[in-house]
Amino acid sequence: MATTPDTSKYQTGGWYQGRQWNGQALGAPGVINMPGAQGAGQPVSNEVVAQTNPANVAYLQQQRQTASVGQVPVSGAPVTDPYQSLYNASGLSPLEKELADKEKQYAETKAKVNDNPFLSEASRVGRVAKLEQLYNERTLALQNEIKSKKEDVKNKLDYQLKAQEANALKTQVVTGGGRSLLINSQTGEVVKDLGSAYKGGPGDEPTPVKVKSWAKTDSLAGATLDDMMEYYKEDLTRQEIFDTYMATNYYKNTPEEVRNAKKRFGVK
Image (spheres, rainbow, N blue to C red):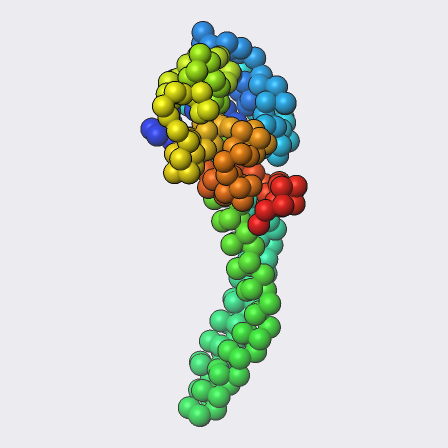
């Protein structure tokens, strides 16, 4: 199933299913689509894509294989529904068809019993109850498998949507002139002056509360876990740093990356 994207909530410069919205149209998968911006019209390198989530590299390659080159206007080619893609890959369709066939067979058999004028009421009720028991027993495993796969599709869809929201943040924190600056990581443009740089601002003593607040700000702004472990190692425990990072970047990392990070830094 293909749908035309609803752009009413799109933000200019944001990325949606691997395409950048410039206020009027979605660009090609993985291509910078902001006229006048540095690298406009050029694909984002795999190295940069992998920094947010390595899985995005394969995702963009797949999108490029199915998309036409160049910008895609809203009124042009449809964009694949992410739910439908996950549903198709889950194998739910044949399972649901199998269950529907069994339900139809059960309903037809039950109707024949109910319509049989030669059965007493007690016999009719007993046979219907037996049919229902057999139907439930014979379809229980199938129903559980369908339920499990639907939950898996829902979880994967939630993960994708939240990852897209997280990946739309293309910024990082740098220090310059004793100031902490939030910059656009692609253009170098200063987005916001965050104030005195940690460890560099006179009169700004690093209390535990302030340090955790700064760590959260850096995490939201795009600092990597490795950078934060190095930057805050003298003032926060590894567990505190990890918890702060994961609270704002959970959906930027795959479950395997989270497990590896825990093992590498010795945290829970």
